[in-house]
Image (tube, rainbow, N blue to C red; front, top):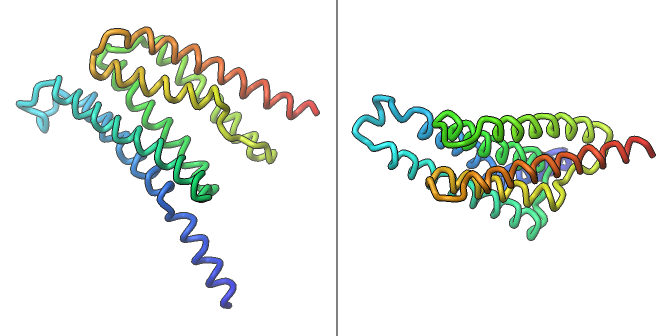
Length: 194
């Protein structure tokens, strides 16, 4: 009885650790940012210039991106890596980048082809990762995958702020996204042909 009680306390502690809470906050911030990007003609934003709504969206994006850095840092440094965290973190990243890219595409500030290529890769690799987990494979992000995420976030930031060079960074993000997807596919098939 005592062992079961202690086991459930440990499980609760693992679920409600700081990295998981930060990832959950990022999950909540993503739709808020999307709302600022796509509902600019809504009555709730009446009287607020669209550039200010983009600034609010950019602020939310920077805040959410900071939680991405800190949840990973805290999880690794203080040995708080959990199964829930390994699911929440990439999901929160994808929801945040999806909100940014789709919002920018709807505003016609980002190439629809670039967004299509990025989202197609993300959906395909997510399915591949689920398959890999079911086979007991290590699914942690590669170095290229981490750089890809950072470049995607920089591209979104530049495009949100309407800074020059945003399109170039977006297409760099596309190239890194496709290359890191190739790495996942290559490693998956290497593992399955052993």
